[in-house]
Image (cartoon, chains in turn blue, red):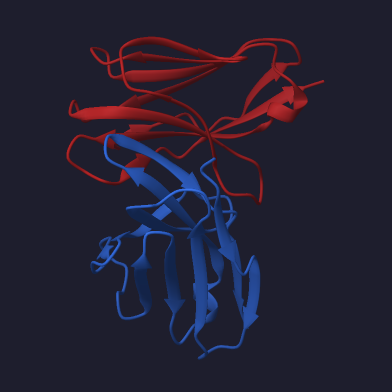
Length: 116
Length: 111
């Protein structure tokens, strides 16, 4: 149980284009999903927290107009990187939480984004 | 002061030995504690969580929590080369949805 998928696993795009990444909880309903970014040899950096049906809460320094998050259902959240630039190249990872008294997060396999 | 502190390592142990990974946290309101394993180029995988003071064992892994001293540790018995990875400590503060991650400790198990 507690399987989270992400699609695509990797993507290459040109500077100025937008990229959408999907995160799905496959065998449970996720009341909360999280989006992280990780640069090489660095720790996870939380970008935003999203609850189903609500606007995402972004961490300080993360541009909400650039990183659009939609959590339309209890099993799906999407992250859209708008007008991507080479500095946005990174490993994007989502995680999902059951909810209630359970705070464990289960991570998706990640999406490696390269902007050329 | 960082909220969750870990030694980045690397921590090198011989195969078959016990690996001891430590983590300290600053907020006394912390209520849930997690250990994740992350292989290079992969996403983190939850291996243990602990909510109460004391020890929690799962196979070769034991998590230890001491809220008075504000530390949590992970013991890996009979370490295997496949255990070589970065181990992330994560802490949830009561009332918050998110968890705070430490920088991670890189473990190397030498055959």
